[in-house]
Amino acid sequence: MNNQIINRNGAGVGDLTADKVGLSPLVLRARIVFKLLAWIFAACILIQVFLAGLALFQNPDQWASHTGFSRFLIIPPILMLVTSFIARLPGSFRLSSAGLIGMLILMAVTAKLSTEMGYLSALHPVIALMMFMGAVSNVRKIEALTKANKQESSEHGV
Image (cartoon, rainbow, N blue to C red):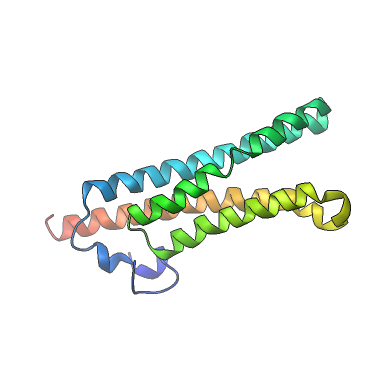
């Protein structure tokens, strides 16, 4: 598998060339944690959408649950960003994790200023879809990276 598939920024610092030597157990565990955090974040987005659906279609009092749970959503992407450094992941993973944090900030802005922003507040659910897709994309990229590393290790007899 070539580097451009995993790191679309091209070859260089943080791509597969750095991983040819072999990865320490800490790095391997950190990559598993990163993948787990990405799955947790994706599941949290689904829960958050479900809570919004409850508030819209079943009971308006559920908005408190939706708002309360939103405070938890920032934790997985922050941990993903930190873990991406420990796991020696390519820069695209760091940018993606930082992008998720940025989208969460935009979500908060669209929720707080919904009456003043008019049509811009309609971006709130669109950003949620983008965050879900970003989390799933991170899972797919880390799986591809893990598979590529296993193939390289077996080719080099490590």
